[in-house]
Image 1 (tube, rainbow, N blue to C red):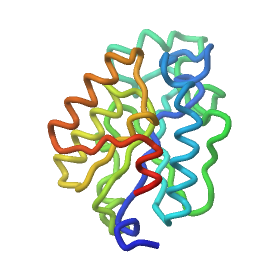
Image 2: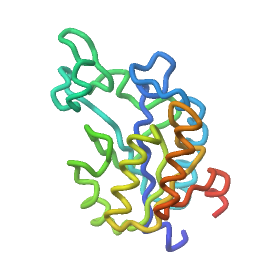
Image 3: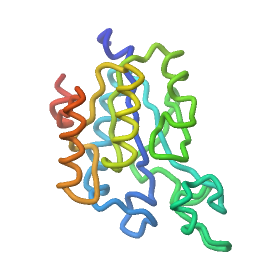
Amino acid sequence: MAEKWKRTALLVIDMQNDFILDDGLMRVNGGKAIVPNVIKAVEIARQRGILVVWVVREHDYLGRDAELFRRHLYPPGKEGPTTKGTLGAELVDGLVIKEGDYKLVKTRFSAFFDTHLHSFLQSNGVNSLVVVGVQTPNCIRQTVFDAVAHNYEPVTVILDATAAATPDIHDANLFDMRNIGVATPSVKEWCGA
């Protein structure tokens, strides 16, 4: 295993049924198309000995821990998006948490906001991040900007293992991330690195 990979973690963000499936409550239009590339990135990460961190949204059945603007999605008696313990909160088929991986639950866009992600990564010697998942303008972008603010270097976003509602939104956000020093290779380029 190359020395650089020992200090790297792969963050797999929000690859859950409610974001990916056609009938998902918060479906991201480009989400389904990236599943094979996310699977490939996870496989390569494991081969390289990279720590895989599964970042998932899980909310209280009543949405009491969701952002204020989303609380209307959790009316009494109705299942809201990524409610803990529901099918919608589960990882999409083909993605499996394995021994040695780590699961982090978040309730906001950034995986760093109000979680212990930073201290967990530091205690495991991680100073470099690779990010895949959905959705580029929200959870991916917020997590990446916070990673840069926390001085992780390098930060890499695999461009064809992340997605947004439209290609234009995806590309515009990748452009912004490149402007703060984030690398954006394809999965093929990253696998060959």
